[in-house]
Image 1: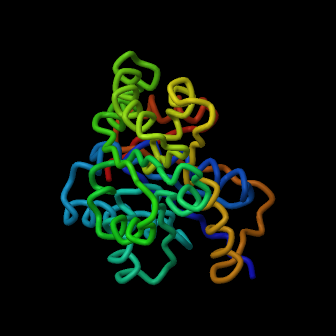
Image 2 (image 1 turned 30 degrees about the vertical axis):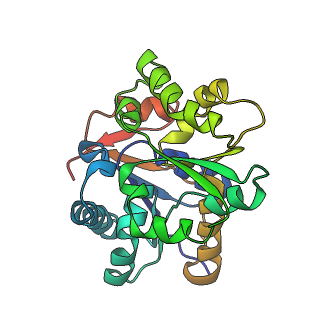
Image 3 (image 1 turned 90 degrees about the vertical axis):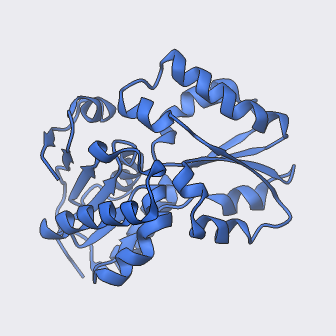
Length: 258
């Protein structure tokens, strides 16, 4: 089964490119369209109704562009809007949730940390997931300010370092041995996080798992592209400079209103 229509990917900004990269590395022949809704970032501080409305706006545009499936490369949008998206549209949606299961399963100290947005940690879907691991101590931390600094191109700023120390130190003191990154922006902070965490603490993000699930859906339901290579398309509704830089200046980023 072949299907040459593109895969759509959206996020509240540039962070979902960490998910996009994992998909592109695994499925290089698939055409992709990425929407960075940076104008409305961060989603994590918005109400559930606002997050659903923004997610549907993004989905409408990607479907209009002919996408065969949509990856919601945003933890906040997934945990607050994925059910509504799947109910409204006929194409498959793949979400991204904090990878609690592998952390909880492999933890030797029975204590794991989760760094995520307020919208993710307060969501019903997240709470249902954490309820499955009653014997694991989960240290939750809202990453106030992290997404905005990343969106502003301040990944390596003193402000970022200070925030990360304040968020991670209590987790280290609580004896975590796994840190789950519950926002698709946060993988870009891994080099800094590694400088703060002791070496025995493992860092988990969801990129590889989402890419494999995308591959499964293409194989089982949608169809793979017959193309031998692809040129990804990137749109942002703010200045394209930071998105272009996070993509190592390899791809053209078009600014458009959406």
